[in-house]
Length: 423
RNA sequence: GGGUAGGUGGCGGAGUGGUCAAUCGCAGCUGACUGUAAAUCAGCCGACUUCGGUCUUCGGGGGUUCGAAUCCCUCCCUGCCCA
Image 1: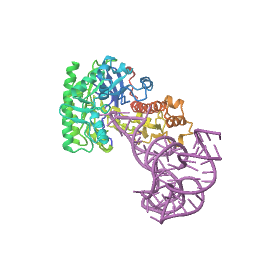
Image 2: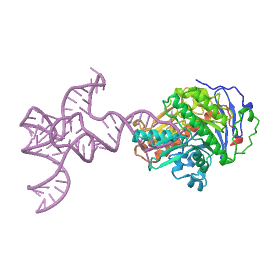
Image 3: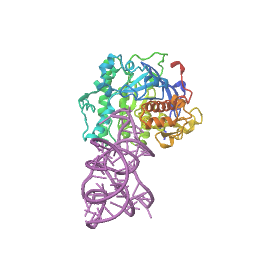
Image 4: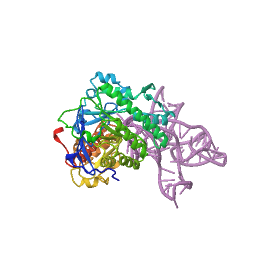
């Protein structure tokens, strides 16, 4: 199952100016990712703030729970309030009072998600793609908007993003080989245009060199990059040659990091681990790897064991809002937890709306030390949800995000890899 | 006391001779959610069931009819108006 295996000790790890591997074992690599806003420990999970807010959670809540980086969405912020507003506000960080790092998704996923949702609802897609870019119909007011690779970069720069994603196309699943290749070629052409435009606008030059050439670069304390990072996205559906080729060609173009896209759009999970296995040897070791849109805790763990450093997912917030809460089955501070991590026995979910919690006056999770578990009972959470009290949404989201962040901390701490110099 | 409107499954409220075990909403029970058009969506929600059906329901009783929640008679109850 584990397709990724590198036996290199801490000291001889490669690193680039913005990413440093602090530990790399057969199973888990950990490191530090520097952006213009700060240093983030990898592997990490990004709470999703699509519209410039993690739903029902304040920036202060996020800071308190130890989040270091969040994700915002170009498409949504472009339409409302508009990148000009955010630019005038001093950037997204100031606008939402979040001073950690921010990664912005390019809008590529919306090509897929808005199209398929509109199709289900109205029978027509509302999204059309051509060589230049994508035309969207705003689902809120029906107006047409056009997004190109260059436009996406411009918006993300205006937002003040720390990690900018290239505009890509997510092919649907299932997808024929021919379609997948066509889509991948478009994604690659767009990636190249994104990089060219990014370099022109930022006046910088992204390195396409491989890890061996960058191994001797020193990383200085707090010496943060003065430009955003730009990530490429690997597509290619479930086809091995396409995925590998896409990764190789992206690496040749050269990006600060590499994302794997398209895996959260319906591809069965067995393909995911296959894809990670194909890509692990192709992606440069000294660059961060981001698996877009994943996932369940056990999926994240498997991916970390396959060499992935970065994750984002709506699961903790959305499922929390819908009443499903994540609960440890083993004390996360117990070293015995590690042996059960890969088996997926370490947690369960509880649907707090279930009748059985009506008179359960114990905390959601006795092992959890988030402030929801320290201060409230299942009975109260059950009651808040049943009576549609907005407080429920806040508490449930905080608890679930905390679970994910603790999970990532456990993974990162496994080899005692925190380098406090970079806090 | 007179007049009038009405009594439908936990609640609200459709239905006004057969396709009605009875639209729909709420409440209730359960499930789904993976780069967020999502505080959303789906299923169940009289009883029994070998999940194909079977049985008893639309205030009570009686009647008309091949057939009634729906029509008639009567009783009971509720709202409103007049005394």
